[in-house]
Length: 199
Image (cartoon, rainbow, N blue to C red; front, side, top):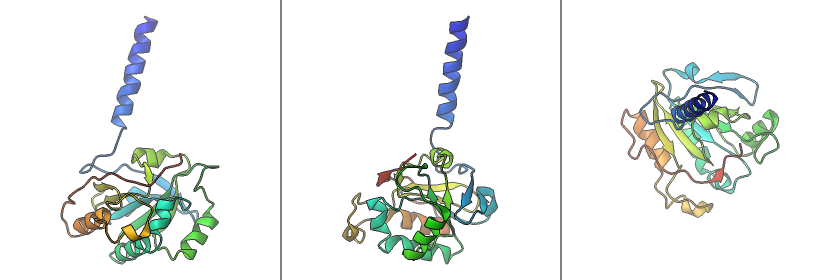
């Protein structure tokens, strides 16, 4: 009897892991509640009726530094000017690379002239794992109805070289523009590249 219960419990655990596996494009984006660098709480439902961009970030990652040479800031400016909510998500756990305080996050935002709507913290990794965020950067676009429309890489050249930005296919930018005009991104899923998220 005990063995049967163990098997059933193990099966249930595997099944529940499968259900929580990866978010699906075309399905509702996983809900979340996060606190930003200024101590304000945000829930995905708070942004109903607005497009939302999630950008996983780690300021010490060379791939993030590449895009913060000006590319990420330009994208943030373009998107937020169109009333898009841009959340830069830090999932680095305490003691891991990229983990910062709220004050340090604000200092980084100012020093890099970054323009996210907010920098939010996911120290437990719950949000990152719900979105299956693997790298920094890893980009997501959620439409006004709360449906996930894009997830993947920021562009097509997985290098840390700034000069490659101009040569790359801008997967994220193309997807975001498509969603803003009511179109379906193509591709809607691409392979992200960068440093592993430091859960």
